[in-house]
Amino acid sequence: GGGARARSGGGARRVAAIGRQFQDSLDQLMKMLAQSSPHFVRCVKPNHALQPDNYDGAYVMRQLQQMGMVHVVKARKQGYAHRYAFDRFISQYGYLLEGAKATAADIAPVLAKHVGSSASSPKRNAVEILASLAFHSMVDTDGWAVGSSKLFLKASHQQQLEIARESHVKRVITEQLSVAVKKRELALLDKAVAAAVEVRMVGKLLDEARALLSKLREEEKASQSLLDAMEDRDLHSLSEALKACAAIGLKGQAVTDAKAMLVNLQNQASAASALTDALASNNPAKLKSALAMADACSLHSGQVQAAQRRLAGLSKKQELEAALAAAAKGSDLQALTILLGDADEIGLQGATLETAHQRHRALQAQATVLDDLQIAKRGRDATALRAAIARAQALPAPPPEIASALAEAKNTLAELDAAPPAMPVTGVAVGGRAGVAVCGSRMMGSSPMGAVPLSSGIPPVWLPCPDGSGGVPCRPLGQRIARLKQGSTLIRVVDGLFSRAKYVEKEVVLTPDSKQLSWEGGSKTVTLSEV
Image (cartoon, rainbow, N blue to C red):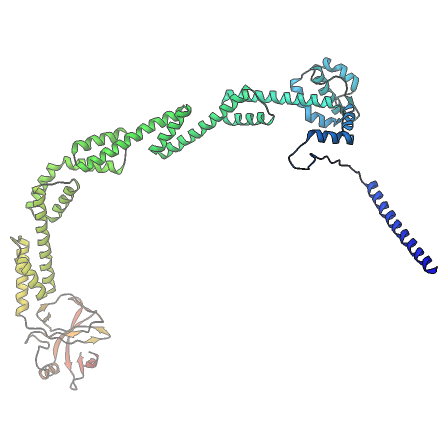
């Protein structure tokens, strides 16, 4: 028995605990509802199968009737379904007065009924709008009410206002379309058509505006292509742009200018082709004709300048041939070279030109031989002199200047052949500078003193003079040493350049020990080991 009581007591306690929990949850829910504004959403199924994009009207209407929504809508329509604050109503429908003007006498009864004799205020202004619309039968006179801060309208009044608004918008858009069509302005027309499409406006005027808009866009595109082609001065692009303009019937000053430019470009192309053919044929008559074509179409190019030079050269062909013939008989190499260049530029042909080329080659050969003779003579190089003399003797009928140079070269070669061979002797370097010492007769070997550059990298040498003229002639070593011990006049090169302005004569004596050369009474010496 006790166990049963315990079980029943425990169960009672559990039931009490569950009830208390439910009560607490319900209290929380009621508090939440009391603090909020609940809205109830009624769900309507579109079809029995709950498939998307499948609307069953009869099934939906049956659900609305069963939920009582149809009665709710009817009740709402019977009351003031639309409520506007005065300022909001004025901003939303105030522009409707533009098409519904009324005098003060026309709207006085309505104003007296709803606002009395109060001064101007948002309330009075809002009522004036409704009164004016009612005077023009755009809104019912009765059925709407005016409160202290709002207007109260039924669904029928709201519908009438929307119809009036739509009518006003269409009237304004129609005026805009008419103006845009008349002015044929692309931007204005585009804006008006967009506004008409937005309010779903239809009619002949809109169709006309759309057609005109499409045409204006095509004209704008064609005009831009035309301007680009004119700026580039491209013949093909300009031709295609003019075809596009003709296809849409575009006219104007730009088209006229483009046509003139096209004709000019075509003439320039023809002139350029004629110039090419004339330059290739080298015909004076064709060159004159092509240049006339280029001048007529204001063609200025390098090709025109080339044709002008060619024509000028061809016009002076006889003069050039005479000048070439005269130059071929003379010896002026530079003048003959210039005339041959002019002949090549105009494409001159014939025996006169060939003779001039032969004479040019002969003069070039003579000039080369003359240079070789002069260089070999200055260098006193026997080998070079013999080679230059041989080339000069091989020339047929050498001119006087070559004959004179040839004689001088032969004399120089004879002097070189008659002179004793030069034997190099070790030179002296005094004070760290390279030098050359030669005999007091101012002859280096058998050569007269000239400018002989010396380099510190090239060892200086002693060059003997002919016997009996001082210095150290080519003798056995013992005799040369004895001669130096007796004393001899030598030349010391100053700044590494053997010239008349840069040498000094010194009396040098070999010391008894044969290790030094001394001068100026032995005050200055140089050891032979430095040589």
